Amino acid sequence: AIGVSLEYMVYDYPEYPQLHPPYDPAVSILDLLFMTGPAARDHLCAALNALPGVHAPPPPGAMYAFFKVDGMTDSLAFCKRLVAEQGLGVAPGAAFGDEGEGFVRWCFASDLKRLDDGIARFTQGLQSLR
Image 1 (cartoon, rainbow, N blue to C red):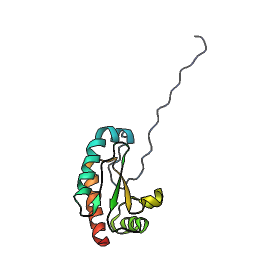
Image 2 (image 1 turned 180 degrees about the vertical axis):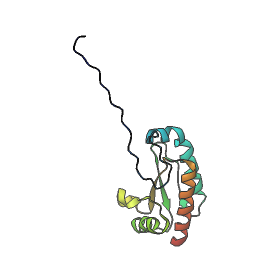
Image 3 (image 1 turned 135 degrees about the horizontal axis):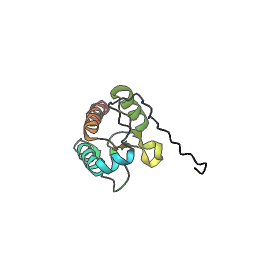
Image 4 (image 1 turned 180 degrees about the horizontal axis):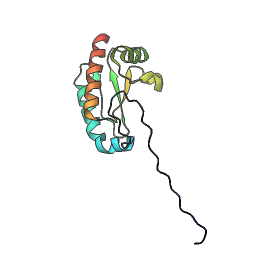
């Protein structure tokens, strides 16, 4: 032998409690985007555009829909209410500058079932705005 030893370690990934189990450690955000990206984008934008007063053009890239909600004058308050009352986390458009007021940003890097659940929650929250 030449004095070289070969060592390796096997790591177990940590398990984290997830809000929407089951947790799959082998699925990265890139996997989700490549597997569901265009379908998820089209699904979410079509569902949002079907709601009165919501204008959600499909983005040509990225993993976020940035859409207008008619009659919303305080996107931060609206998004905080969605979290508190509906358990839905979306970003207020105002967080992206003054021009973003009246808009909401939604990450669609998810499976369609989870998006459908979010769409139902958003619809309920939108009714409280009207």
